[in-house]
Length: 261
Ligand code: 2AM
Ligand code: CA
Ligand code: CA
Ligand code: CA
Image 1 (cartoon, helix red, strand yellow):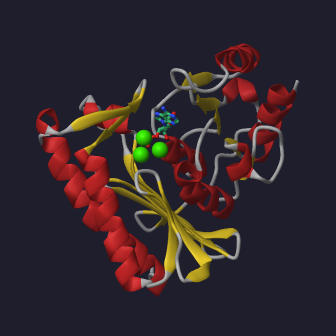
Image 2 (cartoon, protein in one colour; image 1 turned 120 degrees about the vertical axis):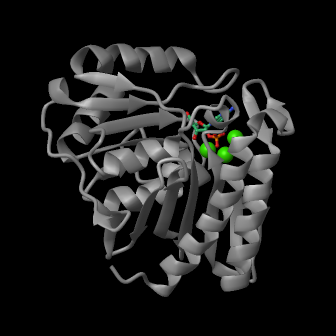
């Protein structure tokens, strides 16, 4: 597979940040950790990886704006391009030594997500997608699953975080969906959840209270892998609604129906 110049820029930046994350994961007990709020941790590993991504992308694509989890919004001279960056998706896993986390970088052009990279440094899995060019994991083409029936489906959910989100709403949704589906998982990395639906390891996923940096790369992966995706109400404004429901065509429809019921 020949990588486009843009994909090379994105994957080079991500691999550089991943080396820093891997080093920090090796001595996670020595990391400086602070709490942004209850259950909302950030460590030196998150900040270092984000800075590496920012510097690498600024150098290769000067003027693009940034929306980053830790540094926030940085306006660029180029108003038509913006990176959505989560330097460490799955911080809670990371800080517990649980090897399931990722870097997520999406590129928005003229209001549309046109490219995404999600990298899991522990499993060495690189998920990439560009608009109109397909989605790949380690150079293998991705496709969503073909399962049609919820009873056979593996569904990933997210849990609302402590003091955030509507827990009652979540339990209503879970009560509607769980008894009908083949199995359920909760992983702690929304970016990997979306990547796993894109490659057919799971058949559907929904979560609320997410941010653009959690979802941007996953959205383009899903779309390029033939997946269906919207916000939890069925609308197109995923970042604004801060919610996502996705899957193959059939499972997406089933999930959305149950969420809206
Ligand atoms: P993070 O690890 O980058 O913070 C898991 O359900 C998803 O929720 C992850 O993408 C995780 O991203 C995010 N998350 C974790 N704690 C959160 C919080 N307090 N508020 C909102 N999102 C959170
Ligand atoms: Ca966080
Ligand atoms: Ca995140
Ligand atoms: Ca993060």
